[in-house]
Structures are given as C-alpha cells and as structure tokens.
Image (cartoon, rainbow, N blue to C red):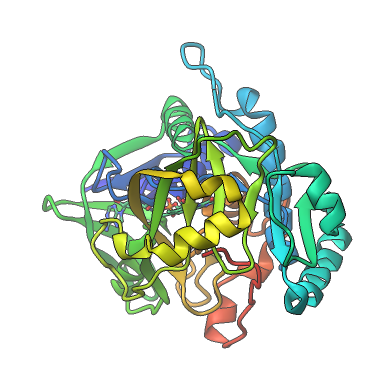
Length: 389
Ligand SMILES: Cc1cc2nc3c(=O)[nH]c(=O)nc-3n(C[C@H](O)[C@H](O)[C@H](O)COP(=O)(O)OP(=O)(O)OC[C@H]3O[C@@H](n4cnc5c(N)ncnc54)[C@H](O)[C@@H]3O)c2cc1C
C-alpha cells in the first residue's frame, strides 16, 4: 500500500487551495489529491458565478472575504509559475443590495455589522442610487447597500487551475480515482480505499468533496448535513449598456451581474430536492421573472436569453455556513465543506486556515473557529443572513 502524509478527497478549489497552502507552509510534505472527475465537469468550481463580496452578516465570513480580495489582487507572487502567469480578471464594481421599505431595517443591521468588521460599504438612498445608476428603477426602493471596494467578480476556474498547477509544482500528487471507503481504528483514519481496488495510507485526511462531502463523512459514520443544491444561471444579452453595473441583488431575490458583453442572472430555485440532474431548470425563466427584471432595469424589456447552465451549491442545510477544521472525535479527519454558494471567494483563506490548523493545531492568520465542526455536534447554528439565491 502506498502512503501519503495527507490525502485530500476532492480537488476542486477547496482541495487544491488546501494542498497549495500545506506544501507552501511545509515544503516536502507528501500530499495526494484524489479526484474522480479530473475534467471537473460537475464540480462547483467549474460552474460558479465566481463573485466576491464583503457584505455578510457573520464576521468570520467578512474576514475570509477580506483575505480573499487581498489574495486575488496580489495572486501573482503566490500562484505565478514561470510559464504560467496568473490572470484572474478581477473586477470590483461592488455588490448592490436593494431593500424595499419593509427590508430596510435588516439592511441597516447588516451594514452596522459590516462596518464594525471593517468592510468598505455605504448605504445609499434612492436619489444617490439614481445618480450613480441612471438605468436603474428605484421607485419602490428605500435603501441600497453598496460595496465601495473589495467586491466584484473574477475568473473562478482560473483560480482553481492556478491553485492546482502551483500545488503540483510544489510536489502535490493528483490521483485520478474515487474514494469509496475510509479504513479506521480507534477513531483515526488510516487509509482511503479507492474504486480502482487499492488503498492509500495516510496520517491525515481532508474531506474536500464539495456537494458530495456528506457521502465521504458517512464512510466513518459521521453525519454532515450537506446537500447538492442545484442552481441555474441564465446568460442574457441586453441591447443597451448598463454603465458601472454592480452585482445587483433585487428585493425579490434574484441577482444579476455583467459577464463580458453579457449579463448573468439567477434566482431562488423552484425545485429544491437534493442532487437534481445538472441541467438548467428552464421553468425558472418565466414571464414573471422577465417582468421583474424589466421592472428593475427597463432596458431589459428587450433582453435575450442566450443560454443557461446549472451547478451545485454545496449547501449546508444546518446553517448555510462552511465547516472548516477537524472532527471533534475523529482527530485526523478534517473538513473544508458546505460553503453554500460563497466558497470560491473564500477558498484562498479557507485553504490557508485549514492548512495552519493541520500543521500547527490552530488557524493563526484568520480566526475561523466559529466555523468549526463542534457547532454541528452541539447544535449551535451560526446563521448567515445574507445568502444569495
Ligand atoms: C451556480 C453557482 C454559483 C456560485 N456562485 C458563487 C459566487 O458568486 N461566489 C462564490 O464565492 N462562490 C460561488 N459558488 C460556490 C463555489 O463555486 C463553491 O463553494 C466552490 O466551488 C466549492 O468548491 P469545492 O472544492 O468544495 O467543490 P467542487 O468544486 O465541487 O470540488 C469537489 C470535488 O470533489 C470530487 N469528489 C467528490 N467525491 C469524491 C470521491 N469520493 N472521491 C474522489 N473525488 C471526489 C468531485 O469530483 C469534485 O471535483 C457558486 C456555485 C454555483 C454552483
């Protein structure tokens, strides 16, 4: 049986970022990524809207985003390779949350939390919104919350590939196989069993299996409340330009942002059963949805739907927040799961936090203890109120 110091199950952006940080912090560490889908066809990391915001209500999420934006802005010295410069296409036009009068207090409360955590956000009334975005209808809007810096979007698959390539350049191995079981004794995992028939011994194991993380946890009888929650993204074209268009979150629940010369948009799903096939749900594209978009942005009354895709949020049904760190009983089994639709932006910080936890027994750079597994065992949900779609 071959052996690694660390085996990471899944090499989406979370597995890749963890492998990268482990081998950056401790060169020579033998890290193996086991990945069943090396084309990443179903991985959330390939199907993401790849946007970043500071506007969360849990301070730990804001800390992860603050690290994330700094990392994205300065990615080259971290991830650059001689033959592979890093091009992440980061843009920062902000997120704009709109509130109708009955939602304004909630937005003000979130604003207060964000300011305390050092986020660069501003509350704007209808007049200021009209001045900034003349193409936006705010007749029924009481308040908008705009990220003035540190919010926008980037090329998520490029970030994923950059983490992978750099990790492999630092000596990480990637094995094309599926983990089908975990061998264990005395609450310690000793090896991962592979679909190909072999097994791989290890001192530490990381569950980075995205929407499938619950299946990996169940291999040692651990319950992890993560579901594959399908989300559809529609690609739209708009006949008129929308200058300085931010990522817009409408009071009715849909979101929209520019993507090159197009717009992309999504909404809360109509069907919520876990593990639905990865096909767009065209029923979400209704006349009512179109009317709602055109109400907010009149130019969209002449929009065209170009195409659509679907991906899985790795939804933590317990509290919509990530689980980072070791299991309280299975001390060499680590988790980096359940980001519930905001993982791409948090991958740089989450990977660092987990790597430090594994190597030094604590996360030193970013305090992520609030996201530990203990809260699941002790039934202490950490609810994130600003979850999109
Ligand atoms: C439509 C959509 C929009 C999103 N928008 C945003 C956004 O705007 N901003 C943001 O920050 N985040 C966003 N996200 C979320 C973000 O993309 C995810 O949080 C992130 O990509 C999760 O990465 P991951 O590595 O955990 O999972 P994945 O990328 O899914 O990787 C997990 C990998 O594990 C492998 N695997 C699973 N089980 C096994 C096994 N037993 N053996 C071997 N391999 C296994 C899978 O094949 C997969 O490749 C969005 C997601 C979607 C779907």
